[in-house]
Image: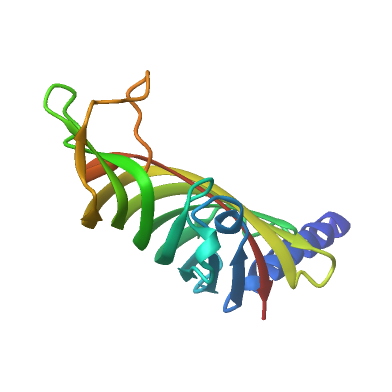
Length: 222
């Protein structure tokens, strides 16, 4: 019986050690997804483990090249800034190498770009919309989104200093797009995708939609 108690004590002690191992830790993160999906940016962040279960985090994303903007068409002056605030709860702090968690985050985006030789639609009402063509125009997009997420912190190696944090979520997306300083602006026949979809560069005004959130963050903790 004493041996059983001893084994249980050792196991519980080990679990508590794994949980305490990340308490008070700070994680530096680098998100790979914004580099892979245009318009691209570099996104880095910091996350702090307040308790064994609760963590808070913040990220900033910034464009560093005009070529990271709209793809397959001529653009200039691409500039994007993003911030993200996150509150998370770890479901499995006792696990040594994989911490499953739930989180909520708020995202803000400010995106400016100069577009050439294309068109945009005013008013998302199918019966009362107008399309305009232009040779040059200034594009400005602001976005705010709130998401609920599920993710995993996967630690590498015995030291558990490095790892990867894939995360997916769903939320509400509020976007406002303005076009200004147009050259050769002309009314044109309405043209829409057969399914009624419009890209981020072709619809003026405000729109609220479902937001899909996806991140692949690599981290280092200390």
